[in-house]
Image: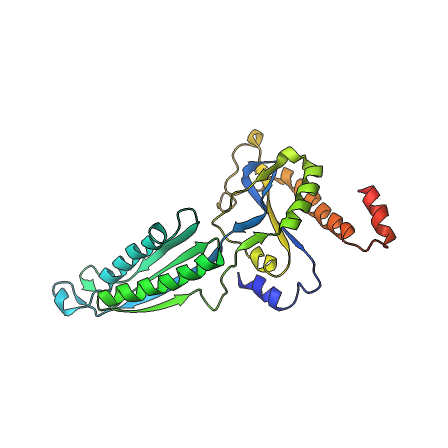
Length: 270
């Protein structure tokens, strides 16, 4: 994740006018592409917390301050941030994916740790979620007489920004892809709750991200691109190559100065 931000900070996009990104998807038929203008993928962050109490023997809990109770309340309360505080029509996610503490069945541990992820499709909602996550963790820990230390992301890695497809580039994509594949094979994608590091590029310059269909029923089932059983359908690769090359070439031709004689000649050939 951090490498894309590092590349942007290093200036690799200086003097670059536009950028296109391509992903494969076995959820759509081969010969189709899927995308949409505007927000496409969410902003994404990670959080972690250590809840500290006072360990002791399970037979005398009154002499301890149980961080497991505090952590359990925290996990439940975090789920209310979306179900009770977010607009049902505004996509958000807060989820705890790790709960770790203790090492014996009869010992209350000194501390327990959790970590998880949060996502939103707008900057405002993302910032609100971040604030509320920290408040819920620290306050719920305090209710159970515990202390909490909250961190966001690991090793100073940045949050993923929202991936927003540029509307002008969408028109360009629609024209080019429709000419290659046929307009009936341009499908509209719903906004996804996943995140992509391409968003770091599209935040700086106009960007456009789309998915290339892989599914071919005659070849059996293609597993998800995130599955360890994923196998690429190589028959789809020529579509991707043609699209990427044509998107770049047509963009360059259409944005050259009118005085450039090469523009007219290459345009006729395309």
